[in-house]
Length: 206
Image (cartoon, rainbow, N blue to C red):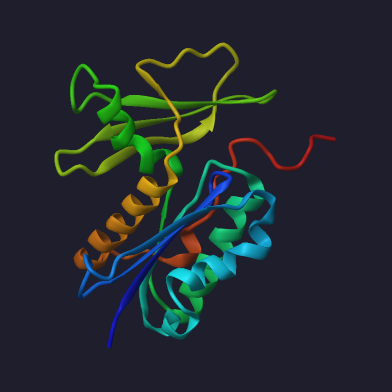
């Protein structure tokens, strides 16, 4: 019987869904990306079923989800779905920030002075300031998140800093690879500890 891994990424207006069979991780690999935006509520379930039909969901051995930073509604929907599946299936759930997923990709595109040098990933938010997190590459190509993405103080100039850049297809693929690695290592990942990252409050200040 197949054992599936499922990865969800909706921290941008593009939805990414990926899955693979742990016993055939190369040939069974499935991945789609599609514009979602405000229509994610109506398209999420169908997109997941396009990659992994609902009949296979009882065979999910582990899940992974991007926890942001990203849009409030989009990030929340996939995190809630992943938490619900993990709870019902009693399986591990890996939550990884979208900045951590892109860290090795960005570092390849903009070489650093030292491969193990900590660096920032930053994103400008219109009218809300700047969000940043700190990362360091590990020798095995894994990424250590030294500071989770958070709202920076006004006027902050983090250095060295790489600018957040979207590539959902590559990032959800990496999320699936991390899920496979964690599955092989049998790393614990309680579903209830996975929560979205909201650097700015979705609720206005009264």
